[in-house]
Every structure is written in C-alpha cells, then in structure tokens.
Image (tube, rainbow, N blue to C red):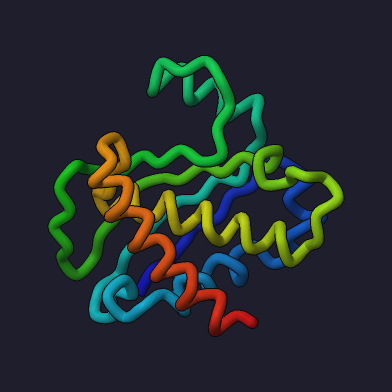
Length: 153
C-alpha cells in the first residue's frame, strides 16, 4: 500500500484539487498490481508548490537555474523493499500544471496524474538520461497512466 503525505504551499492548488490526499491516494489505488506493493507500507511525501520554490530547489540540488514540472528526491539509489519503506519526496509546480491557463479541470488533473507517475518512477530508480532508459521509463509511465485513467473515468 502506498501512502502519500500531501503538503501544499501554493494556495492555487486548492482551486483545482479540493481533496488532495484523496486525489493522490486514488491515483495510487489504481496503479497496476506490480506498483501497488500490496503487503508493504510505502510512504512518499508530495509537496505541491510553485515555480519560484521549485526553481530554487532545482538550482540547489541539480544546478539548473530554472523551474521544472517535478523534482524527485529518492531516499536511496537502490530500492530494497521491506515491510515499511520511505521512498522519498516529490515536488510538483502548480505553474507547470496550469498551462495553458484555460485548460479544463479534467486536463489539469490528467497532467498532474501523469507528472506524479513520472516522479514516482524516479523514486523507484527509473531515469531518462539515456535514450534506452527514456524509452523504458516512458513505456512504464504510459502503462501506469492508462491503468489509472481507465479506472478514474
């Protein structure tokens, strides 16, 4: 079971996702069986932030002086799952999710879901620095996304 501890420091998130904990719990509930970790307690912290904050963190930890959609901070490089695990932290920028500004709530939610899944895979050790790794990660991301969207709609 995956537990997502959601923290929001950007008020604009409240306009688009009313029940944040429920929203992200539902996403994880509809992951394919392989990623549900049924007999384990998996914990993730998710910070719902903005471009200003994520830019600072991106500069500090990745030496990139620009905002990004998501940052992932895995607790460790190698995942050894025991009964209870803390996987790491995710930070999502509201400003990236809210483009274009006139998009529907449904499109906003889909973008957040896809971004959250992308960050989740980073916590599991997936990377996309090489083309081969990018293709592998993209394939897993799409598989998880389709499983979630199918059950949410």
